[in-house]
Length: 106
Image (tube, rainbow, N blue to C red):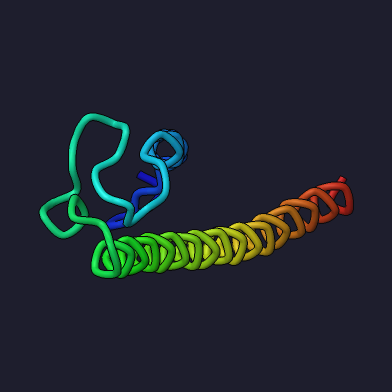
């Protein structure tokens, strides 16, 4: 998990793309993969092509949503780390001030 509620598994996407290649042209009836895609997909024709196009659009939207979430997550991580850098720089300055004070007291 990259962050709660969102999973991007590139190996699954890769395997899915390989499966789609094996299926042949979408909407042209049952694929070469050994199983049908339901009665409409098996029949082929305009309805099969329409269903295939809708499925493609669905997965493309899902992928875009995941990529947007991933971008947001990375931006949040960057913001968090920048704030942490600022905090640590303040700590360094504070310690350097203590060292200077100790040197003056000598």
